[in-house]
Image (tube, rainbow, N blue to C red):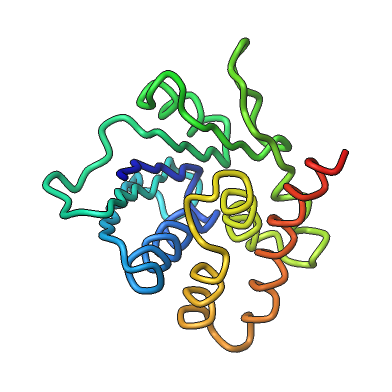
Length: 178
């Protein structure tokens, strides 16, 4: 098993933290090999940003994402910039409040930012999306993601982040039930 995952958006959306949490879940709590790299523009906020994770059940010889097979887009600019760097049949997840997929592109959609605002903090849209990714792809164990969050985020925002993860995960369950 080997997956190349790219989480993309703009600076300030927590794209790098999302990649870190996902990589930590894989490596520390699922016992897999994982490498995370990041890319962002020179702007502190607003510039293109991506977090790239390679995960495998064997040693990783080349640690960079070449063609993602799981692609997350949290902004339209990131979608346009990085969608072309995915395999044709990639699993594409988008924040449908901020991203419109190209014609004919099938994407799993969630209004992550709107849901995060409903929790009172737009900044946890990244964790809402991680919950959605977990439930949609089954590539990462939910318990591993929860443990990565518990051991990474500050105590003052731990409850909020766990609620955001649960909310994203529940959206998949609601979709499947309807």
